[in-house]
Structures are given as structure tokens and as C-alpha cells.
Image 1 (tube, rainbow, N blue to C red):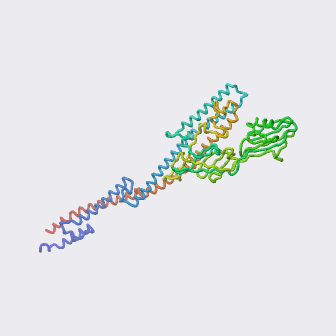
Image 2: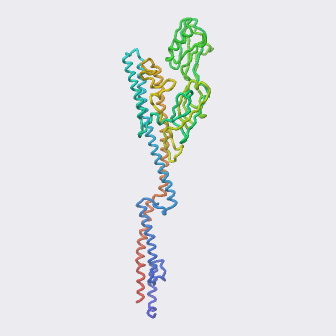
Image 3: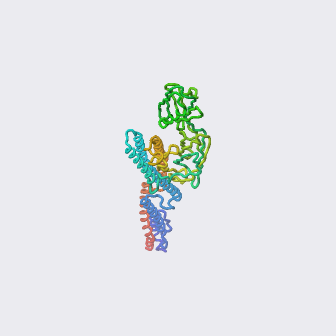
Length: 499
């Protein structure tokens, strides 16, 4: 014991030096050789520093701040929610682009049909010039008309996208309970119908459609010349004194294709002039040029205008031209024609949309508000036109309105209606593309940018922060390793006590 007490100052000095080196190491552990507490403490700190170093390296190598749940549990939940939303938005954008491709394909086919109809119109006008054509030329033009009609049917049956027919009517809406005695033709361009259900459409006539009408009573008391005008044109007729009412009516009817005015005899001596069509654009005007025309039963009125039908569709006011109804409200975009009997009476009818159409999912959430439904109507020659004027197929050889058989006026009316139908079809598809799909894409693109930025702020690593933290972790790790080496050497210092 005497030997041990002879060196107390050296031991104290060494203890103080070791304490200054290790900082937190308790002085009473330095003389223990069985358990190296300073080394254990250094190992613990080294494990922490090495773990932090590995984490920083992982974040820099992956670019992510959150690589597993323990990195930030709440942040991981928020990030995964945003990632799910990002995926849905991206798919919605892809769906929108595909919808545009479908519409573009359909419009390309419609554009070709429109060109064919323009050619058809030119052929009809050419055939009408029979004074300058031979029978062979008329027949050749009729053959060309037949060829054009065949081409239109071919386009209708072959236009497709991804193997799906677009314009043959297979993707049109289906209806039920439609009264053909009230509605002559129904074209549905868009409609919101609950999935697996149907939708009722109520059509109410609140104002009857009327033709323009003038009535006259009496007979011609002298030779008379009159000018009659209608929506199609003007002509001048001359009748001898005492011409019978029936003969006057016949003379007017012979020109109805040129003037748009027909005449009927009512009773024994009443002559009624009517426009051949309904609506406020139709009119009848009679102007005496010479002689005394039969006495008018209209006071001083020598002209009259027709009246459009007033129509409500599911309570919404529809746009009406004569008997043609267009409605773009209440989640429906449609055109249909009223029959003469239905459109001239105050009445109502109901039909159901039972399904069909093409549904495009444009938003990230699957519901009707994020969907656009379109009806791709058939553009075959049996569907272009209407029940009132006639359909395009009737212009072919052997049919009721064969153009080469003096039906040029009727043919022109039918073709004009077909051209209008195709133009409306294209316009409505274009409207959906521009006003619904493309605007939705712009909105979804902005949403994608914002949500992606939010997800990035939560999950992505900040390079500057991580590099600074990595440098700190490297320094701490190296310092801890150096201290660990010193701590390992501490027990051997006790040997100096043995002197």
C-alpha cells in the first residue's frame, strides 16, 4: 500500500487529462479494467452517427426524404394520399387526350361526308339545267349521285377508333316509348343518364306551329296579273277573266316548288294560300299587278307570316324553327322534329333515354360530374335528312326522289338538310372538345402541378440540407471513431499504476 500512495499526483494528473479528452466520461470509471464504459459510450455515439450518415447518403442517392414509414409517419401518409391523387389526375389527362383523338377521328369522317354532300348539291343543280344536258349526261350524273350515296354509307360503316365503330349508330343513345306520331326524328348528341338507369324526357307544345296563310273569296272579274312571293321565291301569274277558283289554285300549285306557296279551294269560291312550311321565316305575299283580283277576305292585309311552335323540354324553353326543335339544357343536347299533327296542337309526349352513348372519364374522381357523355349518331343515307323533307337515300336510282326524274327541288331540300345536320354534328363535337375536354385538361394540368409540388415538398429531399447534414455526420463519425480509439486504450493506462 505504501507503494501505491507514493504516486497519487501522477494518477490525478492522468485522470484529469483523460477527463478533458472524453468530456462526459466519469473519473471513477477510468481505473476499471473489466468494463470499458467510455468505449461503450463511444460505440453508442458511433452507431448513432453512422446511422445518421447512412440515412443522409440514402436520401441523397434516392432523392427522397421519406424512404420508409419511420422517416416521417405523418408525412408518409400525406405523401401517399397525394401520390394517389397525382396518379388519378395523370390518368384523367390521358383519358382526355384519348377523347380528343376519338372526336378528331369522327370529325375527320364527317368532314369527308360534308365534302361529298357539297358535290351532291352541285350535281343536283347541274341536273336541274336540263335544257343544256342530254339524257345521257343526266343519267351519268345520276350514277355519280348513286356513287356518292354509296360512299357516304361506306364512311358511316367504316369510321372507327381502336376497332370501335363511331358513325354507324352503334354508339348512339337508345330510346324507348318515343311516339312516332309526335316526334318524327330524334338525334341525341349528349345526355346525362345515371348508370344502369334511364331518363325521362317530357316534350310539351305550348304554342302551336302555324303556316303563313291568306284567304280570298270570289272570282276574277277581269283579266288579272298577280305576283306571289314565298320563302323560296317570287313568280308572276296571269289569269283570264272568269277563271275558276280551282284553276287558279292549280296554277299556283304548279309553281309551289319555286315559291313555297300552295293553294287549296275551300267551299265553292274560297281560295286559301298557305306557305309549304311552318315557322316565322315562312310567309305568303300577294301583290296585284293589273286587273281586279278576287276580293280578299283579309281586309287590307296582303301578306302573312307563319309561327314557330313553342316547346318546353323537361320544363326548359327549347329553340324552335318551325317544327324543328333544338335543346341544349338540363343535361341534354338534342335535335328532333315534331310531326305536323303534334306540332300544331297544344299537347305533350314523353320518351325515355335508356342508355347508349360514349362516356369519357375526364376527372380523377369517378362520378357523373367528371364525365362527358356523347351520342355518335349514324350518318348513313337512311339517317341524314328528316321524315318531313325525306332522307338522303331516296335520291338514289329507283327511289321516290330519284334526281334524274324531275325531283331536283326535293333533292336540294333534302341535301340542304343533310348538310345542316352534318355541320351541326361537327359543331357540337367541336364544342364539347373545346369547351369541356380541353378546358378540363387545362384545369387538370394546373391541379397536377400544384399537387405534385405539394407531394414533393413533403417527400423529396432538400439537396442543400442533406449535404450539410451529411458533412456534419461525417465529421461526427470521424470524431467518434477517434474517441473510440482513445477509450479502448484507457484500461491499458491503469497498468501504469503498477509502476
